[in-house]
Image: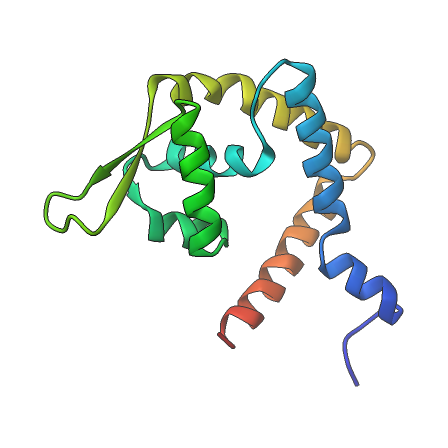
Length: 149
């Protein structure tokens, strides 16, 4: 018998990220309200570059769970707006390394603050132990599915 306390529709809705979508929309609204010309998708790329600058587009695909065309399109647009730059890898010119520009680096503090405010709003009234359980469950879900790919 499956370990499932959801009705089928509830489970699919939960797994496909209704809460995640709501959080992303709220963060986007905060970015817009702050006058930032930045999409949540672009922000997710910046986030991974803040953790490790100068990674390949392929590594960005893996880190952000996006396909190559999506990352190429995002990086193209971010290059046009001056947030990132592509540099051919010294040992293999077919590989593009993506680096933050000064403008991209400068967005870190402000955007992380807005994202943190959103998480505080989203988790209001949720006890810390319940947040921990949720993180653990979602990690198990991810790990179970990662084994199958």
